[in-house]
Length: 227
Image 1 (cartoon, rainbow, N blue to C red):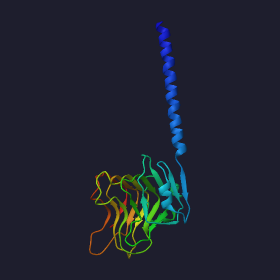
Image 2 (image 1 turned 180 degrees about the horizontal axis):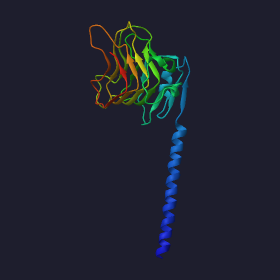
Image 3 (image 1 turned 60 degrees about the vertical axis):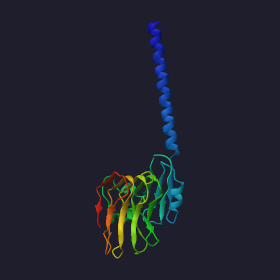
Image 4 (image 1 turned 90 degrees about the vertical axis):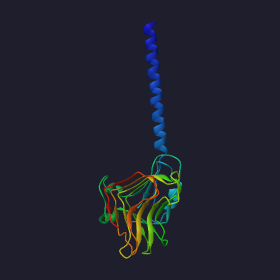
């Protein structure tokens, strides 16, 4: 009786473990199958891809191509990153700072509106990651923020969170007034391995990075910052 009970318990444990393992694998397979790669060719509509993308998706942009903004990151449910990356991101090693000399490897995001932002966030937007992009304006008109994460009037629950810019080049032009490269009004914002330059103006302070209404933390890692 005693050994029979042990054997029965053992079989039950193995069966339960196998069921749990199979269930986990099925969940992981379902997650992998649901993650999509969205290719946006030169001349394509990046904003439409941002609107359509689901957590876990990757948006691939053609290196060297120009994508005209302004772009808004929507607020979506889920906690997996939507990644926006250059088609040549494999030539940008992880953990290594990039610079203007690698411009041919970047997809170019540009704002054409006067004093507009190339990228900004809807209230509460979260889990976006940019890798291998060049962010600038199409004209030399005054720009206040090239990238605006969050707004000065938003509450701690409204600001964006979990957003990453990695291995990217953010810049103004030598004849252009730009007040900020990136405004950091959010939480869990990471700027890493990137190059921010030509941020300058006359009669006011300028900042490569600046945050004043976000709870943070901010992860500023291995960047070149010029303002």
